[in-house]
Image (tube, rainbow, N blue to C red; front, side, top):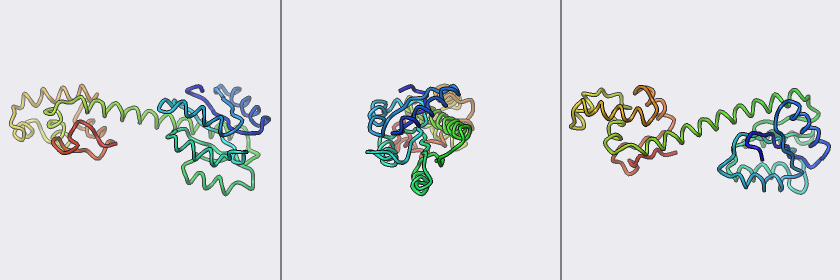
Length: 220
């Protein structure tokens, strides 16, 4: 499975081939699957290495329906947006799937441009989420690399305290605070205390240094 692809899951070979041609003609890498079981087997092999992808999934398939396939895909922890294709009688099921985490659905017959636009939007959203996840992972690793003293200084910094106040609180000199501050900024990849607070604010809750979780790890 290509790390940047449109995965078309439909038990109708004419639909699969038509959609594959459509996406190929628009410059996407399209992979086709004749049913939920085959698709899930391939997805399972990519756990924790998902890459960027969108799933175009037919609601009504045999023997594994699109809804069951979707539920099992979610259970794998797969982050790919799922766009359901549905007939008139299946709209209610598709709406329920969207409420349960699917990206969107399109009712057949649909315009090719509308489908491609929806897929492009879903892929952009998936890329944004993936980038945010990678940044959060980087911040957690950087946080774990801080020394106990650097963690104490960091906790003071994100409370908005100045160097002299931090020095008084920790019983060290302002020059030592400046040294730790520079190390913290370099390791965390920030240029100011405000930037640091903004980035770490996305990793709430923040355990204070010396707490049961003051181990350099933010809770996910």
